[in-house]
Every structure is written in C-alpha cells, then in structure tokens.
Length: 438
Ligand SMILES: [Zn+2]
Image (cartoon, rainbow, N blue to C red; front, side, top):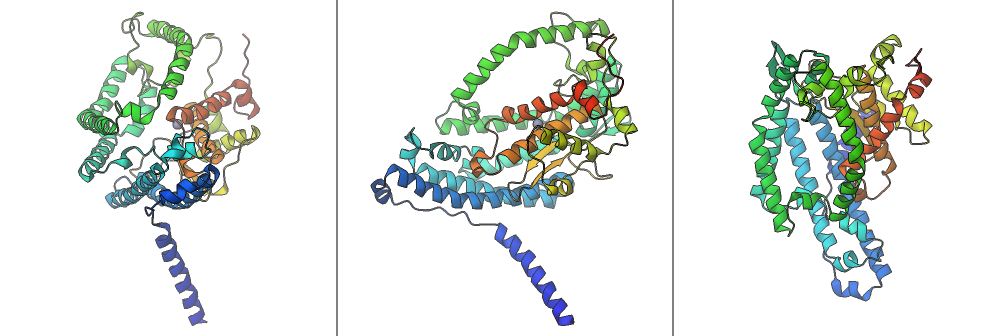
C-alpha cells in the first residue's frame, strides 16, 4: 500500500515536472528549399507555408501562455523582483520565437507580394513584431531597462494630505473632492511622481524611431499603423469632430457655472477639474453637468450595497448580459482564476486589465473593483475585451490580437454604454422608481 502511494506521488511529481519542461518549447529556424518551392503551384506553396505556420503556431502559443502566466503573477506581487525576472526571461524566449517566425515568413516574399493568395495576410501579420525584431542586444537591454524603470515609477507611492497613496488609489480620492484647490493639489502630487519618467520615455521613443528608420520607415508611428488605418481614423475623426466640439463646449459652459473664476469659455477645460486623473471620463461630473436637473442622477453604489452585491457579482451580471446578446459565456476557469478585488495588504497592480492567456480557453480579469457606477461600467468594458478574446480564440495566433488598440477598446465601450441605460438597469433590478418624466 505504502509503495503504491509513493508510486502515485512519484508519477504526479514527474508529470508536473514534465508539464513545465514541455511548456518551454523550441522555436527553431528552418531552411527553405527555394528551388523546390518554385516548382510548386501557388496552391501547394500555400499549403506548405500553412503547415509550417501551424507548427510555429503551437510553439508560440505555448510560449505566450507561460509568459502570460508569469506576467499575471508579477502583477499580483509587485514587490517580488524574482517574479519580474522570471517574466523577463520568458519574454525573452517568446520574443526570440516571434523573431524566428518573422524571419522564416519573410522567405516567402513572392506569396506576400501576391494579392491573390489567402496566406498573404497571415504572413504579413507575422512581421508585426515590434521590438522583438531588434538584433542589437545592447539596444534591446536598454529598452527593457527603460520600460521597467517607468513601470516602477508609475507604481511609486506618494504622500498627499498626510495620506500615502499609489496610482491605483488616486482616482477614488480625486472623485470625492470638491474644492478646486484640493483637486489641483492632488492632481499635481500624482503627476509629480511621473516627472522622472519624461526622460526615460523620450529616450525610448528616440530608440524606437531610430529602429523604424533602419526598417526604412519614417518613425515609430509608421511601424505601428499603416496608411490605410491612419486614413480611416482621420475620416472617422472628421465625422465625429462637430459632435465632439459641441459636447465639449456644452460641458465647459456647464462647468463655468461651477467654477466661474477657473473656466474660460474660449479656453480648454483645466484637467484637474474633470476629477478624472487622465481627463478622459466624465463620471464624476455627471451630477453637476447633465441637462434636465430635475432628473435624478443614476448612482448604482447604494443599490448594489442594498442588494448585497459582491465585486464578483457585477462580473456575473456582465456575463449574463453578453450571453443575452447571443455572445459567448465566459469559461468556468474565468471565475477561479480572475482577481476581482484588491488582496488586502498586498502591493499589487490594480488598473483594470483583461488577460488573454492564449491557451486552454484561459481568459482572466484582474481588477480591484469597488461597488460604484463607474466600476459597474468598467467591468462591462473589461468583459468586452474578454468577449473579444473568446471570439477570436480559434484563429491563428497572429490574428488573435486586436488589429488596432482602439478597436478592442471600442468593443467594451459600445457594450458598456448600453448597460448603463435606465431601461437595462431597471430590468436587472438596480434602478427602481426611476422616471424620465418630470
Ligand atoms: Zn480597455
């Protein structure tokens, strides 16, 4: 019996060990016999390339998985430098694999140049590897160093009004302040922490622009977007601009009633008065600037507390909402592996983030949620990212990223906006006695 138990234990341990070893896969360069390739028909060439990329797909997916696992842990233990080092090590292997694949894919230039081939876009996507393409190890290390210094500064704590605050706590305090002097002083204190980042950031951008020039591009913008994308964005912006200007003017005019000394009607709105650290959301202004003052503002905080909401419950509501739109339900593992609230006494990253771990349907969110209208919105936004991951999970690795950062952000926002409508909030029982009439 004893021997039996020991054998079982041994097998389990061996399995765990093998699992770990198996995950760090090789990503080898391969030689292409161009003579043989030229004798193939286009169809055969495509199949040949597809089989190569399929194999690389398995490798890079495994590497992305272990790298994301390590990254997720790093975010949960910001004080643990060994976790950061492990993540950096995996990133290095991951980036080197991306680069190997890009080099191999470039050898099929004739297929990339051929507009008629179905494999063309996949081959093109393998080339979008950013910094991973850098050959010079000194420059590579320099970029890594700059990034980690900026990250460290971003999370530095500071003292304001005898209270120690970190970047993740500032927003909640800022939202509750009323006095413009307090708003300005907290905003300044938070941004002062970031000042040393300026030089690191300029250096990083200068290096990236230099890299782009070496690739015969104008600058980093050219590396991350293409002409077609820029044209579409410019066109969308021109279409939206009149509405944006009207909305901005309206908000500024309403705010000038609150702060007559501080808001000038022909000048930009001072950012600290938006009560948003980045000046990007107007959640905290809503009660002061919305038209129709006889309408009560929607504050979900008290309703959620009354209904004994937990942080996780908001995510369940969001999940049900996505399913009601005939979209995909999150997998069971999501509920076990995500972090929905701040872990007490732990220096951890709190900025709401959705993770695609790239394997086993593993998708997660890490968020220090609070029971407020703002976080109710943000939860739906983050679940929008998760939905995006679930929708593209069966595509080849290189298509499993947003074609553009803004696209991914827009999915969550479009859906989150719908969930904040009084009709929906009433339906789920979070808004009672709300009427749109006087
Ligand atoms: Zn987002």
